[in-house]
Image (cartoon, rainbow, N blue to C red):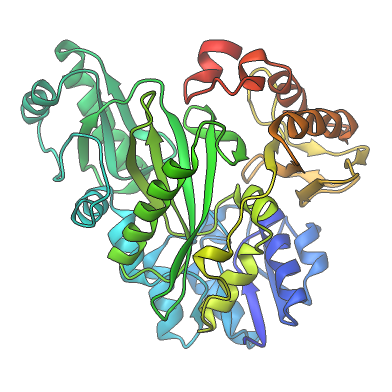
Length: 445
């Protein structure tokens, strides 16, 4: 096992990793920008080191500074969390070249699954279903028109290196395709440095269902069931739950088997997530793989009892999985609400000083957060300031528990999305489980 791990991240995920390390008896190093020195992850780590100025490019994305910090603190491994450098194959490669273990998959696996085209090609060979569309990049609007006519409208154009909704355009007719194609390529170039796009059939009113997997370096791969992440705004997840309200045991097994097959196809080792679209007829299609720990991993931890971060660290240290597939049992229901420092109606960032803070508690309530009373939420980074997770025996009880916990959650001095989540928990459609990725635009907003 590692002696010391440097966490190349900040906020709640850095704290989550620090807690896992402490329980494993591993010392921790926090990195921070010059404006982030009062953050909670800095206070909780055994050591801390400043790696640059406020802009992420000068600090949390500064590979040279992070590697130097690991070397001067004698850290034997780096945990990237999520976001920032977590899916950067070059960073993982540099860590290896410097004799530092990157806690994540191999650079090769990251590259194969990081590019949407190669990912579609790979999983297709493994027998995983994908939506009708291209398995090569589309270079011109004329080519795009021909492909769209063959698979039928509506179609969706996606950046091959994309994510988060950038470089993604839904097209309902031939007339609107040329402009959408040009816009998607421009956004892909701007956001990812790669203009390549592909086209697939647009799945209307799907659920976003993802399967958590764990794979060690000895060829063992299992899944931990699914999460329903359909409550989204502009492709950004806001609420997640496990298990998915509409999945049967048979469908869960088939999706889980496909997720395991996809991971094995790229010789994957670490924790990761295979994301699927589930249509109204319960057909599922591979969307992408996230080669890192997910923001929403706590709901899976709550229903399985597996500490995903600790397992990720054990895997990176070369240890075999401690679980077989038959060991994984789904117990009860869990829901996670992402608490953002944002206007709950406009969803615009609201940085500032927290002047009064009281997290909820009680049986089955978990708060993963990096803030405290008098903490200053900075404008330089992501607006998510915490995650509220609840667990109960049934989905109905979990919704009531979440409503109660949200009512208890006090964050004064700034606006947060707590009122938004309170509204969702009282929505008839959400209570009945009648949701899809267009739920917010259709019902709430």
